[in-house]
Length: 167
Image (cartoon, rainbow, N blue to C red; front, top):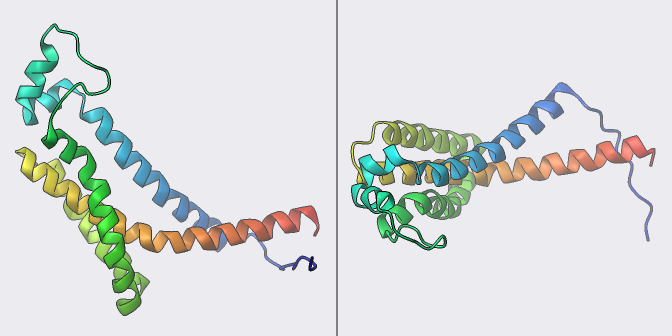
């Protein structure tokens, strides 16, 4: 086995800021996906966007905990972010290669802001799903770029741990 390589890395403001930004990307994605699941079972939300499901929820009958609401439209609402994020990630790598990380992050940010505005102003379910699709595009673009930041952060952590251990 070869000797471990010692890097003379230091914790600077730039390293801390990069780590915080990388962690925030994962936090936002987790928060965005987690909130949709909770909102999808709230009465006022169901009453406005899924009135049939709301009526079914208020009926006093035994339902399966596995599949309370048998609705493809509700499933589309919750999964639209993940599906469009996955597809956008594939296109984001080409955009990043052609235009650079900055353009890719800007496109992701614009898609995310547009999706947030559209989701917040949604009057019907189709507007809401389209807004969530745009949110997914924003997540996909920024996630593709932030994966590289996560790799950079993990390398910095390794250097820091080696420095603390005195290797």
